[in-house]
Image 1 (cartoon, helix red, strand yellow):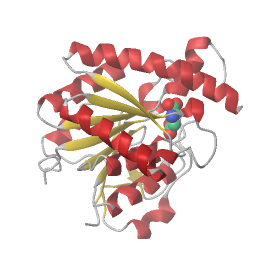
Image 2 (cartoon, protein in one colour; image 1 turned 90 degrees about the vertical axis):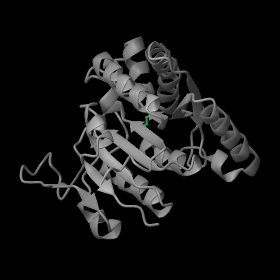
Image 3 (cartoon, rainbow, N blue to C red; image 1 turned 180 degrees about the vertical axis):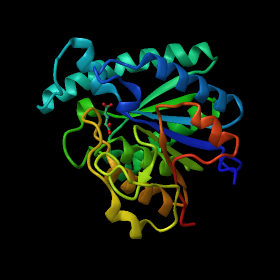
Length: 262
Ligand code: GLU
């Protein structure tokens, strides 16, 4: 089955652990490789929408903060510093391949407010018509509570996929996919290549992943639920090997595929 055959618009979520080294600094080699593959996909006629984490981590690394920020003010300051660092790099790398990027920072209240929602939809649509690559992140510096926060980019990417009527969501993480038990504690854990029934699987999710992002398997399963119930399938795959995207593009199977309900 070639999952891309009917996928003209794809949301790609890149997690912090994919984009940064354990030092918190941006993983330039990996980001360059990812941008090249994503540019190639865009060249092939697929419309890419990127949801990128990594701002807080990049901010921490840039100012030499030395530890993961714990107060809201520190997190928000680091996000503000790191976001421009991230965009500067994406802009340069995508430009090298002839693509224009556009930054969209989202807060959750936009979804519930008809006027703001329409404005955001119009902006996305216009950018997509212009064949720009929207790069989306949560507007961390100004969101503080559950009204404004999506609660991590796994969830944000699911809403963006829904919002933009995407055909597929690719969640690139630091794990190969969903396992039947936690692979960090159980060496016999087996990768689940396909999920048709999410309810039956919910109990098998592991813990919080690395300490640089906010992801973890529970958030990924919540994201899978949001998109599959809207008729959008999702993959979890390992972002450490950007070539896996070509495997998918060529009709191969990698990671875990979540079948959509419609
Ligand atoms: N928005 C956060 C950042 O850019 C990441 C949140 C997440 O990893 O889920 O650092």
